[in-house]
Amino acid sequence: MKFLLSLSLCLSLSVYSFGQKTGTLSSKDQAIAEHFKTEYKKKNYKKFEGKITPKDTQVQFDDKIIFYDKSDKTIASLLKEGIIYPQLLTDYQMQKFLDETTDKTQKRFLKLQKDPRAGFDVNNVKLTSVKELSFANSNAKSKRFKITFKDNRIGSTILYLIELTNKSVKEDTPLEEFIKGSNLTYLDQVE
Image (cartoon, rainbow, N blue to C red; front, top):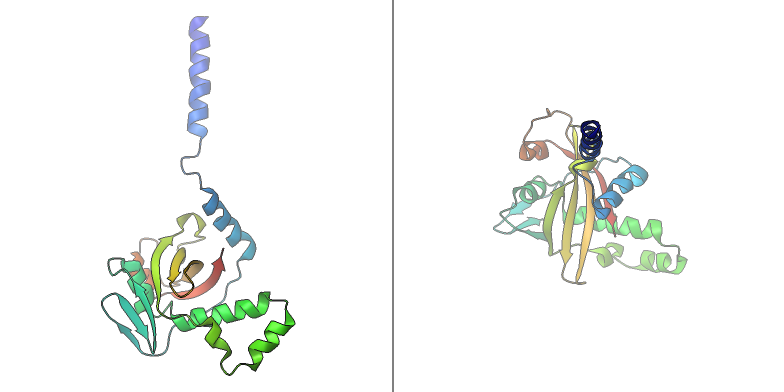
């Protein structure tokens, strides 16, 4: 009888331990996964068409600059391929303001300015980290990332979620190769 009791106890405990998930998401990652489920709208963004000048720890896009850590090859690839660039983020910030602001006076004031984009200008920011969100990837032809920017002018950190799509890759394609042939298909700023 003791043997049966101990056997059933062992089996019940082992079933419980084998049934647990090994990779539970943090609350921030759960919020990101939920964000992609509820807010995701695929859109095709153009790559930068101007002059890209990579230097030691910065990449210059015409007259705008993004700084980065040169040891991070993912960041370097995103910038050098013209997937992420200051003018894209400036346009995104301005459109986000127009879409989300309900104050008509602010919108009118913005339209009266000579250069309405100037208030949203993204220049001399530092791209501090890029993290692939493997839990949020939907298939092998698209990869999702979390990008952190540091803007010293306003002393804040800005978090963007992006999705890159590359229709000509296989499952085992290295990340740098994936980025080279990819297009930006999603961009959103999260709080």
